[in-house]
Length: 218
Image 1 (tube, helix red, strand yellow):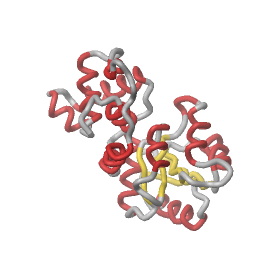
Image 2 (cartoon, one colour):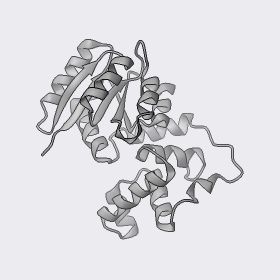
Image 3 (tube, one colour):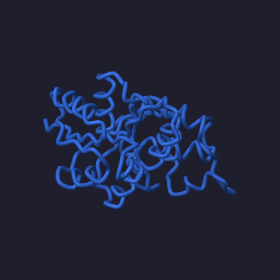
Image 4 (cartoon, rainbow, N blue to C red):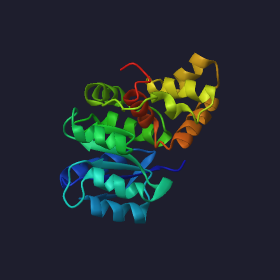
């Protein structure tokens, strides 16, 4: 099995080294490098092409949000981002999720939560902190001003709309499959189609889009 390639970006070198040791201790993943700021992160991603990037949000030179914006310019080959933060209810966390981060971790997260998040993000599954992301969105999210908030769904088929709304409620692919009587593989196909048609990066952006358009109850 090919291991998950992980990069760690944090200006606290001791923390970054600790994360590297944790990642390298796993049988199914390896740390391909660490960086101390956003500029170093971009160079690291260009040379090592990690699958998952653990990215601190507050750093010198380029902060996490700016780094994500630069990575977004590179298209779909960019790594899946897990935002690192010291504070759960932080405006920067919500900004990172809007910008395409697949999940977030607080720096005091348990090792098993860190490794589970890396695996889930790599596989496109809901991350352990998705519930916290939903709570953050409910507390700080802003409704989109639009005459027709559901217009975002126009590009989707009826089944894709159904899957979109179930993802937005925080259901896993397995839970969606049981709910709509489809195989999990078929649900995964529908989720990928939804992301592609709507130009969304990951499941959490589905959640954000739906909540901020008032398509699901917060």
